[in-house]
Length: 310
Image (cartoon, rainbow, N blue to C red; front, top):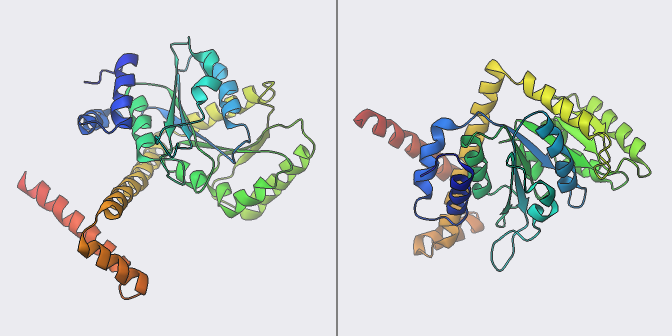
């Protein structure tokens, strides 16, 4: 079904993307093989140069003997639901390298840019034994926050003079970023942007202190240093800290998957009780929080009953 080979991996991704009948069997089969790859999230506003940065980083990782899988999340086509930007075309220079696998996946209308499908594809790469999985988000909505739920290292890309650093602060990006990278550092105001970000980090006194770097992705300037620091960050994440991080990521990811599944079922149902339920929430007659708490209690009780009967 899934033996981790490139051909098997491509087939499994197609099954997951298209929600085919054997999807759950594949996902269940890989569960015991997860948690070995290091996931690097790259996010930032549209047009800041995320794809170009990743394209420049791939040769650096490959020079270290590390295999690289890229999950490039694109805005969805309103007609087909498919990815429309085609990052695989932009990174075509790596097509002949067997140690690089690039896959575009549609955001499918998910504002954070990380649909459940994208998460499953990341798991497939992990189970197949890829060393580094780089995830490029759409860079809209809550992508900066969501990427922290599944990435071991978070890289936030900024550009000089666009005012994006202010938006990032509002989004809480400093709390989740390991690296804030100012791209296009040859443009005016790059030093000012660097200074602003460093001062902002110092003032926030976050538990995780992001490092600020600058690069020029188109020329490769600063890329080796960025990859070197990412690798150092990977080495620091070992033992108990790594286990604790994975456990927390799994918990938050599972909660989001359950929430998305409930939302899809809720929105697609035409049942009269659902319509009445919706009306009562909108009118303020009904508080949905107690219902959600009851659902969680039922879930825990059902899980306990399942364990007891085995």
